[in-house]
Length: 265
Length: 265
Image 1 (cartoon, chains in turn orange, cyan):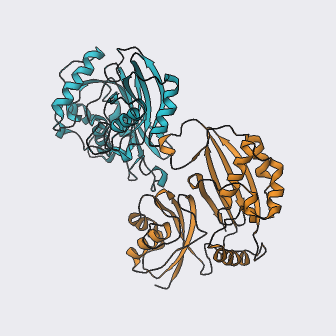
Image 2: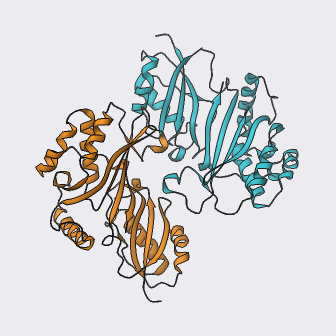
């Protein structure tokens, strides 16, 4: 068979994994997928995701691509791959794509949700799927703060400061070059939607943007929680952005409330 | 403090526990609760549940009682107990009850749900919370079969055959004596409601009765699944009941779809 480029749409429970990216000796989404594909096709390859997710972060529709020369018909791949994967990772769809399609380089926008459980008790069935914050929060102020990050901004204040930074910047450049819509060697990103919604006992942050820096959603949520507690005001958000300094913003919110919900191409 | 009788209403994710009943060296709901209470009150006691749940069975509102001489006000007990319990067990409510109230002896009816996931793919977040059956089922025939177990019947054909049987019968007698509504040394039970409901991709069995034998709900579901597959007809249910022989009914359905939903007093 000539090689095909396959696009996987994946849901996963990130609780039991050390994030997306393959790591020696640790269970990761990418490594588990690679093992399942190898067991079917005898090809050792690494599926490329639309981006990494950290340990404990979930996905409703992560996208990954890989090339295969296997003879398995595309229409059958989803079922046989799900048979080899643990129940915590499910392939929702597989499609054949043009050879120049790439899960990360071709992505035009992503949507994340962050679920904050506001009631006194988290149902045991949701313990790994929401962040618990039963204490008072000024949800109106949080809405105002969330709206103030929409648009095109330098998000350095909300970017992880970590040893992988240089690598991530190089990756970001590759992404943005192919997206044709962001400056290259900077932390400037475009946010199209940024708001909270109440769903029963949940207060959910919804953010959609052209690209995200490492930890950016969790750092935004950690900062909005400070607004909710009254430690900072919504109108402090512009100056936090202008500071271009991680120390100006709030702490990184827990991973377990975060979901990659959609990747648009 | 004079001893108080406290009634706990509990939700739990049964996945990580070896069922309700305390067992040496194994995590159980009852044992974990006893440890949490002991750490608060320095009293070693075993909370009495409305009944046992098997390994992997969940509860939305199990009820348990215990006596305590601790000075912790009843109104505070829920919060301090939840602080000591793992996230998989949550105390939803604590109330002080008359001294003759007993979670099992005073129970008048129980409701169980059994969740069958009918779509091709189980979302990873539901993997431990539903039983997967994506193959064809005649859901109308299953409805008919379910209706045929309502009323007062000898459920021997649906009762677990296990070494604990004698003990369980003794317990059943104790329950039914106090319920004043069932014969004593038999497997006769009264079922008030027995039906299936469709909720999106789920086909849910709902059963409410005065008492249940060990494995009875899972054996009913296993038999209804045979009806759905066409192996037996709905109208075979009366003769399966009449056989009073476990071999006449279907297999025991998996534990993970089963929930204890309500206990009525």
